[in-house]
Length: 357
Image (cartoon, rainbow, N blue to C red):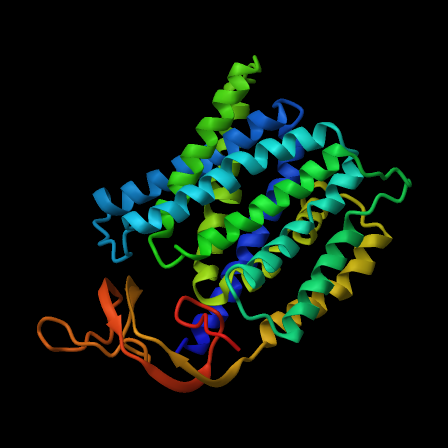
């Protein structure tokens, strides 16, 4: 079973991911005075990929940290390619095209559709279980994000560009569900590959369009911002996906606009308006429901063989190793088999619990 502290850690990871990503919005506003939107997206992604690559090399070469994470196999590589193409390349480009033809107020509202798209895709195509409490929580968080992004000036309207933003959210929803399917593999590799591929593609496209880069210090600031707000944020999001599934992890990620507003107030002394206070109780209630969710029933596990990092503290990993001993206090990764099993315990839709209800 999933240990209770693992579930709590996953929820905290999802919230920290939202906090880091939410921080990118106020700082990106400063950089948009120097960068074209497509350029900035490329710099942020490149910062995430290069930053975590440097961290990974330091761990291996200098700190001599043994990597116990499972490697992505050839079959799973398709999920990673799909996540890079849909979420790292297509979605940002379509979003930038849509933003050029859409009012900022409309765009802010429509971007909240990502969590909804992730949920619908997870429900229909990946059969992820979503109870009434989680539906209610997602509804509250989405409503809070919509309220927070309303433009009280009354300037609002749909357009072809707005449909492009909705399409970008759907592509990110696909990305989230694809990433869930490889979330038990080395998260550093996932983020590094996605960041470098998406960053290089966006910057190459911006160069083809004739955009010139700003001063070096602005580029460095953008890379550092991408390292934390895109790199570490996605790393934590993947760790959350392992135990929470795509729906719940994305629901926590829906706090990003709210946290971004909070950071803007702390750093830039932005003044809260009535919308912030209207969204606050909805956000708090949504968070409470997510944290308090308990899901327990008799369920069956079919035979399964796969590879991922694990311990032997639960009923799912009681296999022996070559020395016929159980390694109980050490995380490790290898190809292992799960026999058919039926039992009852608290769980969420992680890689071992994607059963029908």
